[in-house]
Length: 237
Image (tube, rainbow, N blue to C red; front, side, top):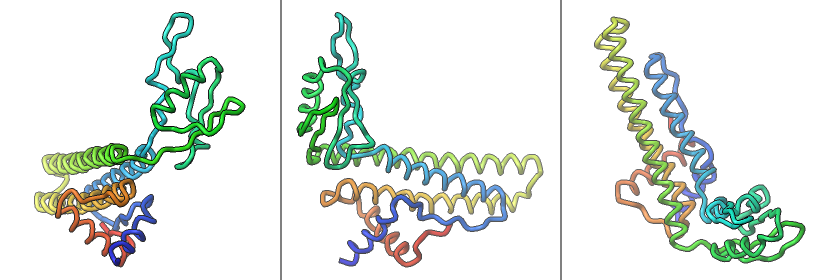
C-alpha cells in the first residue's frame, strides 16, 4: 500500500523534472550538468506530448481516395480535431460529403464508434485500449529512453573531449582534469538513474494494472527513487 501511495504522489508531479541542479564552480562540470538536465527535460516533453495510447492522429494520412482518376490522401478531406478530442471522445472534421463513407470506414477499422454526424463534424467514442495498444505505447517510451541515454553518453564524451583539449592547450592542470572527468562520470550515472525512474513512471501511467518491471534492477532503482523523492521532493545533482 505504501508503494502505491508513494508512486501516485510521485506521478502527480510527472510533468516536472525532479532534478535540482546544485551550484558548480567548475565551468566544464556545470556545462555538462546543464546539458544532461536538458536531455531529461526533452525526454519528459516528448514522452508527455507525443506518446499516447490510441493515437489516431495519422489514420487518414495513410489512406488514398480517388478524385478524377487520381489518388489523393484522405487527410486532404478529413482531420482529427485534437483540441476537442478527449480520452473518451474523438472529433473529426470533414470538408467533402463525398468521402463520408470512406471516413467512416477508416473510423470503423480503428474501433472508433460513430456517435453523431453534424455540421461537418463526426463525433466518435474512443475504444478501450487493448494489450497491443498498450505495448506499442510502452515500447515507444523505451525507444525515447534509449535515445535519451545515448544523448547523456554523448554529453559526457563531449565534456571529456573539451577537458582534454583544455589540458593540451595548458588551460587547465592534469589533476583538475582528472577530478572533473571523475565528477562528470558520476553525474552521468545520477542522470541515468533519474532517466530510468522517469521512463518507468511514464510506462506505469500508460500500462496501468498491466505494468511489469523489465527486471529486478529496474524495480529496485525505481522503488529507491520513489522513497527518495517522497522524502526530499527532488534529486539534487
